[in-house]
Image (tube, rainbow, N blue to C red; front, side):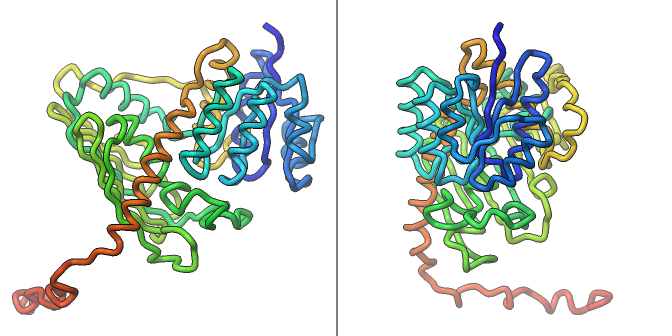
Length: 368
């Protein structure tokens, strides 16, 4: 099989994770051929770390390279559509960072371009590659929980972007697809949909409670009815004093025969019928030196999976259609919030108050 050349478009903080994924396949004759970034110093830094010779200032030059068969798009949300379409037109397979685009219409344009040229369009959802998340998915698919009835996500974080502060586009209208829902919670919404199926109806509330200067929400609550009839919720905020998504995330799935709870991509509680234990799983060790990658090895595994799939003519492991559905759910949530946020409880704020709590019953307790 001929050498498979790869390119990376956008050399910010997540790009090294994609590069490590390519690096993991050097024994399969896969090579990172070229990188490009609007800030040349970033491209040079990434190229130097991975011994990449070709550095481009314009992504069109990278796409014109006949030695490249696939690319990763590691750019701000508003750039995904144009670059992905240009890549498809150049005959390149595309693995795009989340969210797929700014909205569903843009996602549809991207999908049409890839279908028209017969190229693959994949979406990065690195949490799907956490071992326990894979084990839970396989158990649910095998019927270990019976019929899924309820799913829920509770997500808290103080993270709003690149720790170095080099992502000023985040949370800005026209540059980002949304607030916390599209930057962080989208990962856990994706897991919920992966476990419990696609969404049919949405009701949502959004608010700017911690960062009112931002254009989009920092806190949100979504209620969903799944196509299966199951009911699900997602509650999220990046106003909490929790430094990472792993510590502040809990996912629960309840079925007629079982219950699973994950915290930070790790199963903490699993109740299933006898003989329905979670299946075992072994993933390859990540490459030496890749410990620098933010948020674990999921990106590395997905890049490897993506390259192997498209190289052999198979669909990408996480197809662009999944990214389109995520955007459709989030668009419905934002549309719902525009209506719901204008409604209030009819009795008004004085109908109930925490001051009415029976403090007198507590006054005789020690220390009160």
